[in-house]
Length: 436
Image (cartoon, rainbow, N blue to C red; front, side, top):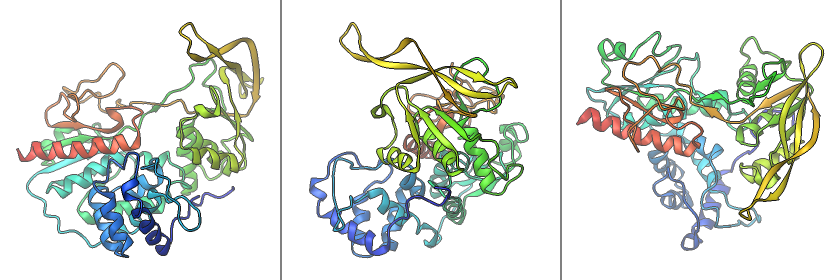
């Protein structure tokens, strides 16, 4: 508490090698789904188990160049297999993945030879980085364009330092640069640089849209624009800027002493734990029981250990403001279980059962909508009714010629792994289009 240092320290080399050996002993008894991004994790483990750290890291990097990210942010895999080491601790394959991924920066520079085709990737978030990594491997000259003055997109803005340190992201970007990916910041597409500019003047043959982590969904309550009400995404972004010493936020003064977080997704927990680290008293509102929280159990446990309070079976109904128009509390209604006509157990609101959670700051983490304002001006690009970019089913092909799309622009709210899988597929489709 009080520090933004990474919570999990990682494994030593001896621990990683030993854990790999122990897990391999259970290989035939493994249950559950593996990591969809890694083709053969057991082949990686076999190299690690014989102390070939470099070989294991190279094999992992070949299938998942963003393993340093997924090892920290993605769910554990083969979760049905409970393997324990000699210290009675569960062997985590994500921890082994992280051990190897943190050594990617020391890999030798690959002999990448780009051909005559050039592809532009718009956005340097997870989808953009994944697509760029696989495009350059297929001989495509890749330039990633980012509107912000820094690279990383949502990974830089919305993931707290204690889960994904800036130094880890910087090492990943350096690795991709060494692989041949070119990065350009402070480029506002398509206002300052249009698709036609890229095609006609830049010499690019295809554009892949990956920018747009999303626009925060708010509660839809009256007085939602009052001082003290903020999207959790905005709070996380401001805190990352503050932590990096960027102006104008040099102190955590935009948070009140008492903070209420609405939502129980990962962003809600990230915001809550960030506020706790700034010395705030934080309560998270859950529309149901703690068992209804849809985040990994270790995240819930760690948050509770850090001091997060839970208000379960509560639904926000209005905001309480003081005489100056600033928020002073969140009015909630009690929820309870009921059996409906079909015999199903459902959560319902209790009539006339309201209470107030006192707070100077209310953070909203209800989800994200596609942020396609920046691409709506592209001629011939069709959008869906929800504002997301239309693509052909199970592909990255848009309605506009030479333009592809992947990530949250196409699937708002998709998981990190789904975004990365879509980006990898998009890279293959762009490369096939250019070479075909």
